[in-house]
Image (tube, rainbow, N blue to C red; front, side, top):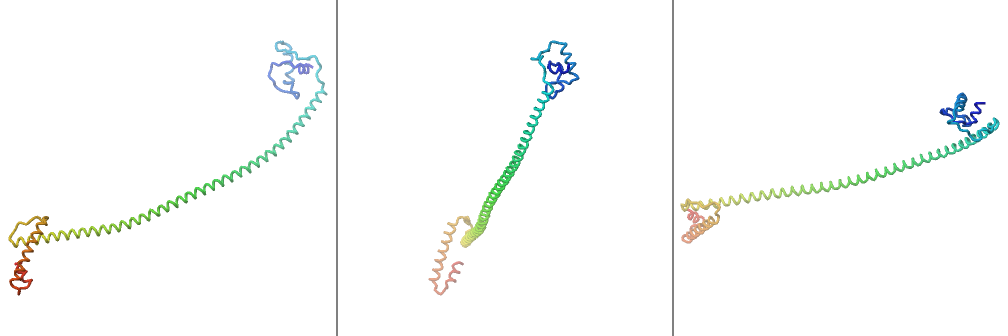
Length: 239
């Protein structure tokens, strides 16, 4: 009776909650409820009289009926929750399958885009390599043409250099011959002072004067003695 009275009075407890009953109102174990009830009776600080504390509590039959109704409501709620869970499971399965399909489609699209990009990059690289190859071929042809042109000009320059050298040698030999002829003519006159080798104007003028003199001598010899031949007259004039 003390335990039931303590449960019905719902007096405040000073100890922490340990256990709940099926109704959710009894928060302590029965073996501790009597002692707590006696302790609460001995103090008035936390004693609160609940409203309608003197009214009779619910009977066991009414508690049973209420518990049965709550149990049936709980079973119904569990059934609804189970049905909802199954429906949600189906929806989740459908969503997962749809997600896998979308993922597969996105993966294929990504692979296709990457393939097209790689093909585009490969084509661009191939075009670039082809363009570079064409440029290299043009450069090679230009190099070969330039090389042939250089070889041709080298031959022309070599021939020109040989011609210049030959002309220079001919000029030097001609100058040497003119100088020697002038010296011979001067020695014939017993003149031992020779002009400079580069003074060709004086040398040629002197040779021209000597040739005119010798030509006049030859003509004089031929006119004085017609029987003498031209070669003999020239030899005599030179002597």
